Image 1 (tube, rainbow, N blue to C red):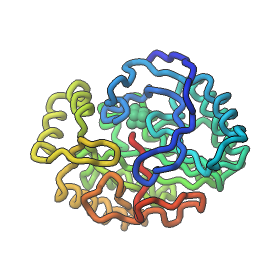
Image 2 (image 1 turned 120 degrees about the vertical axis):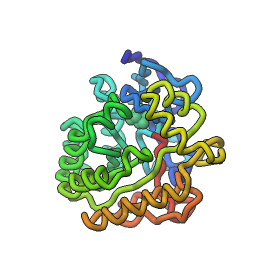
Image 3 (image 1 turned 90 degrees about the vertical axis):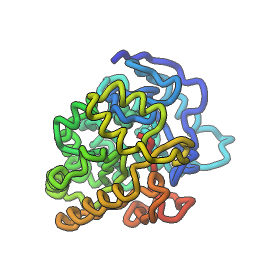
Image 4 (image 1 turned 180 degrees about the vertical axis):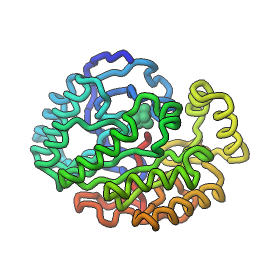
Length: 317
Ligand code: SF4
């Protein structure tokens, strides 16, 4: 994967327009992502880079300017990282920019949150341990199967590295939850697969997970058809065949896994979770057609009040 440093021209803090991230400032350190998850919505956007990651190398300076701007009318209450990329990609230059940006915010007392499928280096954990009440960490982990990972998330951290993130974040006193998203129908929602995952999460004291099934969008379908083995793609495609296109979040054309399959799967997660003392919450932003669940309970007080009661933070990736 080629890394190209570029200068960010516009503002680096951008207000999200979707779900319960609405009106929250978001920040991405790169355009493109070296993890190359096959289901990545950000990779499916028109003009998204392929086999190249653009790093906003001037991001720390621009961020400092925006934070110090005396004409700023709205205070920055919270910054959500990684809505279309990942701060913990392995490249040292990406990590350096991420570290500077997070330090700038935390030193000013501004809470941050992130969702990652990467491995978090120790120096970040040390930084977070100084400001534990200002950090909300999400770890994306769908399955602990190596085979799943090789096919669906070829460049991301291994499941064991991500489990190790959980251990070190918890030891640092940081609020951490696990996001099981996207659940891939027929691949990551079997009894055995969920049992194996929850066993490892429970060992690490995880008490809360957030669930959502895979969506189909036009850009993703093409990507999946090119990057998945043919039989895997065909099986997935069959699952969405009879489903209508509909608006989900900011996407006007999405297909959801049929309600009966999703409900069956979420119930399976829920009942296995109960045995392990893990509460399973379904992401309301990504499941607009089934009853929403309140998932903000227990989150730090810096969480802004969602526009729609009961919705979860939605990360497009
Ligand atoms: S889903 Fe997230 S981690 Fe995976 S490629 Fe997309 S931005 Fe990167």
